[in-house]
Length: 161
Image 1 (tube, rainbow, N blue to C red):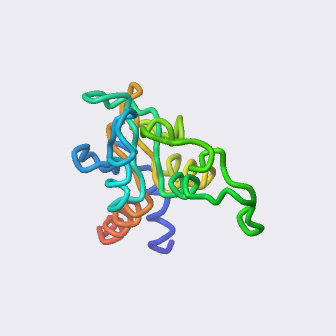
Image 2: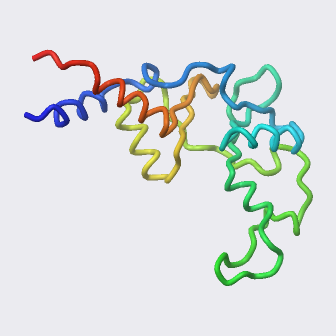
């Protein structure tokens, strides 16, 4: 059997808790009552922000991505290529807080789920990142870039026959 055919099933069996990025301090977290200025300052260096209930809480309530910001900037007039603007457009409302623009209830996985399950959720819901949540609190995240780095490291480990 080719090495690749052996590695993929083994990689799929790894648990989310064993592959997730556990550095909560490095994760883009923001409270739902944080200002738009705070949200935008984080998004200048990241492509997403996890939204938590409040300061000191890690209860995940939403996510804000670059696409959410694109919805805010959508033009008021219909543009044939893009269609009608989203109701989240600046032309309809003023957004002051993270909770106003976040996407609620992001797709998530549990620490005991396998990489295969997390990947299937990412593919099915067309997302590039998934939070790892335990008791409603975010404890880590798995991103597409993170999976690529982990798989590359995984294939460099020799297989015992």
